[in-house]
Amino acid sequence: MSMNATDPSPPVVIHLTDVIERQRINAFIIRLVALSWAVTFLDGFDMLVISSSRPICATDLVRT
Image (cartoon, rainbow, N blue to C red; front, side):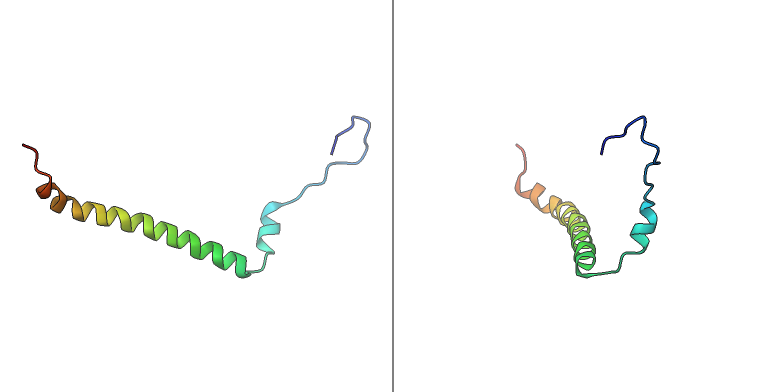
């Protein structure tokens, strides 16, 4: 879409918030939210497991 200086028509303005608000909740949105939740949950879970297993691993790997 090239803009010409002699083109008398104004550019089309699309209000993105209106487009998003008019969207229906469909299977794609539900899957996207579920996947995002799962990634966030697992990211926190692995940090919890690593931090709680560190003392056990530290006793097994004692430096001499």
